[in-house]
Amino acid sequence: MRKFVVAGNWKMNTNLPEGEQLASDIMSLLGQRNFDLDRYGVIIAPPYTHLYRLGQIIDNNKIRLGAQNMGWEEKGAFTGEISADMLLSVGVEYVIIGHSERRKYQKEDDQLLLKKINLALAKGLKPIFCVGEELNDREAGKHFDVVRSQIENVIFSLEVHNMENIIIAYEPVWAIGTGKVATPGQAQEMHAFIRQMIADKFGSQVGVNMTLLYGGSCKPSNAEGLFSQKDIDGGLIGGASLKAQDFVTLVDMLIEAK
Ligand code: 13P
Image: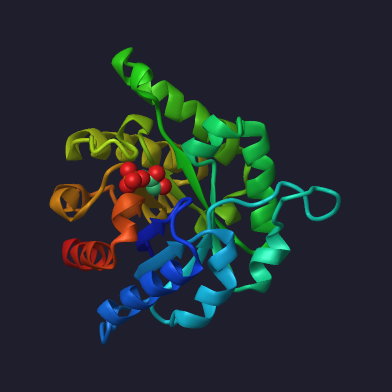
């Protein structure tokens, strides 16, 4: 069954007390809501330094923990890296892999991302794999080509049985943190394209069940149009995930739309 998800990527924001406050505000706003956890997922991906503590604050029946990144090797002399086992040991379930900010600033390429995804899956973490074109790609009409190669280079190397543990997030780079959101039509056509690729490669049932999130300036004022699209299964939220009320409103809007 396809799962609908709102995931908050806090990026490099909040210190620990601020993060504790944000997580407890989200928890209390979610309050008594009882949603079907097989059908809906709420994830927060705070900075590494917060994971252990926030794991103690959140109710696992409502929110799951994600990390924003992960090291590419299992363990060893990799100063400053955080391993899959370390994440698992503090209760992390999801890990964002291939965010455009890491592709850009840390020069992470598809080969490295494939390594990370394989390791995450082997360890039992669920990757949220990010794809998306830059503005010049879109202006040149190459957005489908860019996303196709990102998916082919990474996802197509995986085994079909891994597909149920992966989420793909389409995040057009020009929409991230810019306030410039993709139109529901632009997002839907890319999501439909991705789903078709997955279906062609792994079978139609895998395509139907795949969770595809939209990310890029998604907030309560524009989410209705996005979440109502048939191939958009939720959002990977940056800025709006730092405001408890906005984040929980997005959860409500997703449940309402699906
Ligand atoms: P914004 O919602 O701030 O545009 O960020 C989106 C994003 O990059 C989530 O991973």
